[in-house]
Amino acid sequence: MVFFLAMMTMMNPIKNLSNMNTQLQEGLLGASRVFRLLDTREELPERADATALATLGEGVRVEGVSFRYGNGPLVLQDISMDVRPGGIVALVGPS
Image (cartoon, rainbow, N blue to C red; front, side):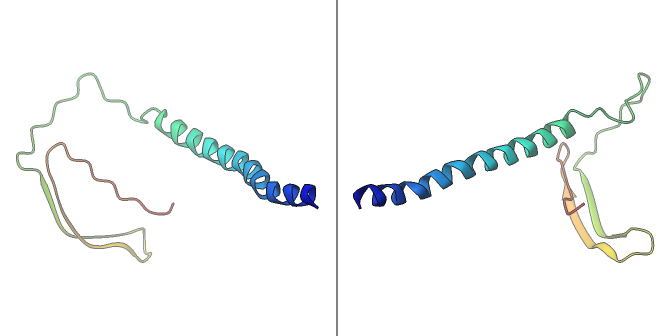
């Protein structure tokens, strides 16, 4: 009976250990996708004779911007924001 009880109490940790490999593999797959994306080169490399842009001063202000793809529904509606010089803005959503 004691042996049976010991085996039953060890079953759950063994299951968790086997699931850990699956989670690790999924994490490694996700990381490889991210690194592959980060390693892609720009489609349009900067030209050697490109002119440098002037500084933006206080930055850029965007007010009341809306956007849609073709004739579809609005995906951005009435967006306003201030972007300081050197700031980075990313709009993230499902692809």
